[in-house]
Length: 454
Image 1 (cartoon, one colour):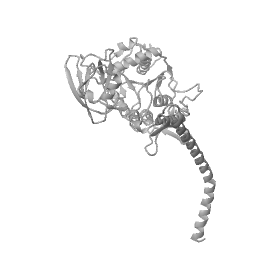
Image 2: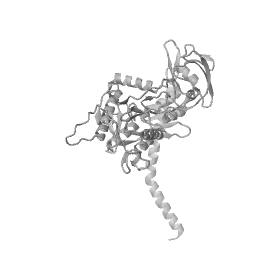
Image 3: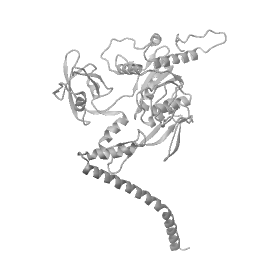
Image 4: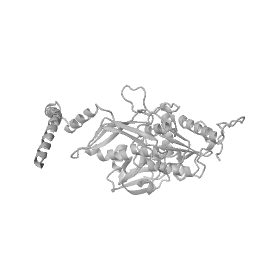
């Protein structure tokens, strides 16, 4: 068969294939164009004829929002003007100088605390300082939100803050605005030098670590703390994922991967347009084994559910608290054409190693991660716990050097955080059992008398 005949035959085959494919494609395209024409027609008639003047940009946004509202709360459109703020939110960062403010009833603005590593903290601004002026603009009955806008600004620019210290001295600070990263890994309380104290009990040494959100550096930060407490002789770990809204999926995977042996399932994801993907632990950089309790509540969502549920299914940790939120969906951020913003779209669900779907679908009666140890907490107590955590996060001025560890005596005292107390008691029981296993005819060691591990 000569070359011309082969080419002619191939062309005929291609045309036959296209004849079957094009009609469906063209039909879909015609439907799309018909929808767009109708949408544009409605938009123009509303803009021209509605009884009151309309903001056309709001009409555009409303049309997009209305379409996405038919999906789920996690699929949203991010317009170009909000892309930068959205990206900062995903990364757990913000632009500014890194101070938390509180406004008293008389209008006085107090600096609650600087943020770790922020320009304000490096400059020496401290908790309890009173903010008097911004760029020589004296603060007089200014709204807090307006003040925050004044202090914020473009990265690299400067702002002058004048503060009054508790001793009465007035000091001006010229700060350069930066991308400030809010630390997500926190301990039980601050030491006198404002470093974190990660041990909630000294004898035996029980570590307590909070992970507030899963941002781009959650894994390396958490691993650093884990290695630190292991080197300090930790016997057991309490990881607090309560009130954690989730975040970046890859960080959750890396955290699980450093805790479970090679070859175990971390999680599985699958969606209508996404093939099933099973993540398997690789056994690299795995940490030494140690007893572990993960705390969750109904505000623990997404990546927090992946970590707690996967560690539970892999029998690596005990989960304590209340059933989690039930946000088991995977979102992708899809850039739109011609600077049209971004589309955050749900594309898949994730499944725990047991095959359990965590996501709460409409009408579902079972969702989330069900703790093995159920410890309820009412709303009033939750608020007290959050307030206490905020107090413990706050920087302190110079304090006299004292023991900041609760030790075994502090553990026995009643606390408002009943879930944390239950976690401590459970961990003490585990450690006592490991240190003094039951023997025939022996006298059991009381769980209320923690002893030192060898």
